Image 1 (cartoon, rainbow over the protein chains, first blue to last red):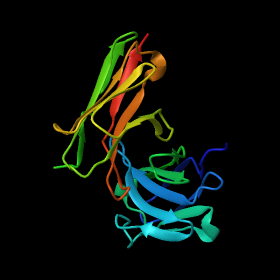
Image 2: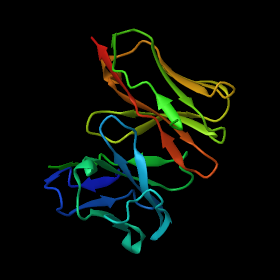
Image 3: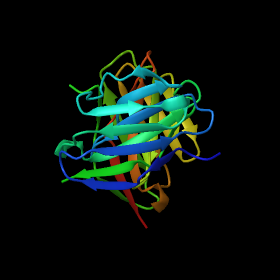
Length: 114
Length: 110
């Protein structure tokens, strides 16, 4: 079974620039999550999709972050404009059922905002 | 007060040592308790999960939950250099919302 694919692996941008991350979940996984992991902290949920609908985006800073999951498969997360405090690893995860049963993370995209 | 508290370490032990990793929590609604392992530049991977108070063993790993004290532990016996990673505790509430600890960095020295 192929894992959760994310790209790019690394990105360095200047503050106020925009950036986009891409995620391809495990085939057949209906639920997709984007997490932000700041250095030295645990992952923090940004947004959860069920198929192509948003289930929870309560912690997504909507003034600058946006995410979409077209056709219920791939997803993109965008930041515009980026701030220094957005420097973090952005993790995508997917699951096929209850999170406890099969919740697979990708390797993440490491974003540095300078 | 954070929902989940975890000692960040870092923890450095010799190969073969017994390692104890701990988390405390404040929310009585948490129903599942998990331990994730995260290697450098990789995403977290699920090691073990438990539902009730008590112990659950899987090879060299033992997860322990004490709901009365709101305290969970992960024990690693006969630690190996390949166990060097960051260990994250995580808890799932009744709404399937995850709450992660900050992670403990472990280095096992050969």
